[in-house]
Each structure stands twice: as C-alpha cells, then as structure tokens.
Amino acid sequence: FSPLFTQLLDLNSALLSICFMLFLGFTDDVLEWPWRYKLFLPSVASLPLLCCYEGSTSIVVPIPLRPLLMNENGLTKFGEFFCHFVVVDQNAEGSIVNLGLFYLVYMGLLAVFCTNAINIHAGINGLEVGQSYVIACAVLFHNLIEIQSESEARENHVFSAMIMICFIGVSSALLRHNWYPSSVFVGDTYCYFAGMTFAVVGISGHFSKTLLLFFIPQIINFLWSTPQLFKFIPCPKHRLPKFNANTGKMEASKVLSRGNVEKVNMTLINLFLQIFGPMSEENLALSLLAFQTFCCGLGFYVRYELAQLVFDS
Image (cartoon, rainbow, N blue to C red; front, top):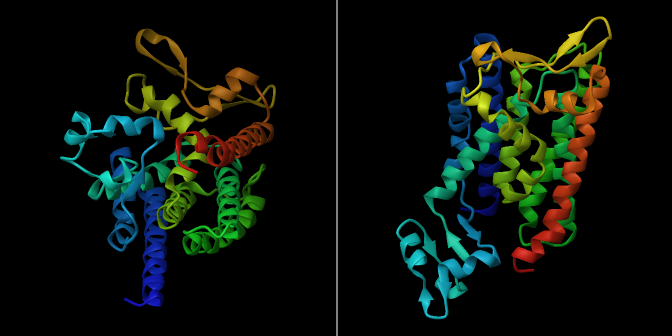
C-alpha cells in the first residue's frame, strides 16, 4: 500500500474508534449500562484501530531484567520457557521481545483502562474535562518534543499532535461551561470520548508507556478503589463526596460496611478530603487538577531522566 493510503487508513480507523466510543458513551448515559458492559464496550470500540494496526508488536526489555532471559551461554531456562509464548530476539541479546498477539491484547486493555479511568475519577464540576485537558496538554508537549528531536517515530507524533490540538480546543471550550458552577454536565459521553482519544493517540503514536505516566492520578484512584470495585467493601452506584449545606463545603462520603460500620468511599476525591479536610467544590477541583499537573510533570521526569537508568539511551 502507498504511504498516503496507510495514513488515511490509520486516520479513519482512529476516528471510527473515537466516534464509536462517543456513541457508546451516549447510550450509557441514556440506558445506564451495568459495569460488566462498561468493561466490554471499549474493547469493541477499539477493534477498528486494532484491526488496522500495522506497527511493531515488540517491546524493549529493561536492562535489569535482561539477565533473566539471556546470559553468556544463550537463553536461560526462564528465557526458553518464555519463548513458548513470545519471541525473544537473541541477536539483540534479549533486549527486544516480540509479544505478537499479546501486544494487541495489551492495547485493547489500554483502551478499557483509559476510558474507565477518566469515568471513575469524576463527579465534581470541572474535574472530568479538567483532567482530560491537563493530560492532553502533556501529550501534546511530549509530541512536540519528539517532533523537534527528529525522532524515528516523528510521523506518529505528528499524527498524535493533530488529534490532540483538536481535542484541546474542544475541551477548553467545554471546560469554560463545565467549571463550577457548571451549566453543562458532560456525563459518560465525554469521559468515554476523552479516554478513547488518549488510547488512540497512545496506540497510533507508539508511546503507550509514556501515556500511562500521565495517568498516575487515575492509576492511584483505580488501585485505591479496588476493594470497592471488587466488592470486598460495599460499593454504591455513586461515590461522590457529600455537600454540607451548613458549611458550604464538600465532605468525604461514607458507606455502611459489614457490621453497620461506616467506611469512607475509596476514591481519590474522598481521599483528598480526608487528608486536607472539607473544602469548597471549586477548591477541591483545583486541588485535584494541581495534583494532575504535578503528576504529568513527574511523568516527564521519569520519561526523559529516570528511563535512561533502565533503558538504552
């Protein structure tokens, strides 16, 4: 196929996945899908992108882990066992592993995580759009750095930057109306749209690991929420912080656990209120977005400084 045809195929498959997820988000707002479907739907929406994916399915193994796969005599016992599932590049001394189909599975799971991570870290005015705006700016900045450095994946980063510029424009306009006091509520439609957009640029731009570094607050929120998500602790449909009309501030919400013991709902929003105390909804949103910005900066430090300690320069 010609380069132009390949680029059009990538663009159309990316836009199809985003639009499909946008439609599924709208149906979720209308029909209120159960959680088991919310985990399945992003996988379906990512199929056009995965079916058209023609990039590499190989990963670079961190330097400290390479002795587990190969030594001076060749493959280790673990490396031989590992080769039953993937391909270890012996010419590269175990520094490259071709995951094949497992890489496509990983990309499908990335789409599931990105869409639901934005969706469960939400519930106050400006947070859904605000966190997406901060992440999008970080992704665009990463793209510009790679384009400026004449990276081998320059074209992929140009493609990602094109999508991110459009997404930032849409989100900045929406954030103006979604900020406290909100006149527009985004629902699951925007959360799924934003999450799939990030998954698309991460997959098409071949920087999925870097993308996850910008999702540190969402990863913390998911890990902290795990006991409730897996029903070890009762999980109400909505775990939003409660509004105290007497003080005009948001307070951590609670749920009755076994033995009629009250436990604070395990979300990052409620955790912030536990640590820093009750605060207004606007200040709470600003605090969470400041934390998101800090984590994105930390992600850049890990990507461009600490990564040199575990990967070849």
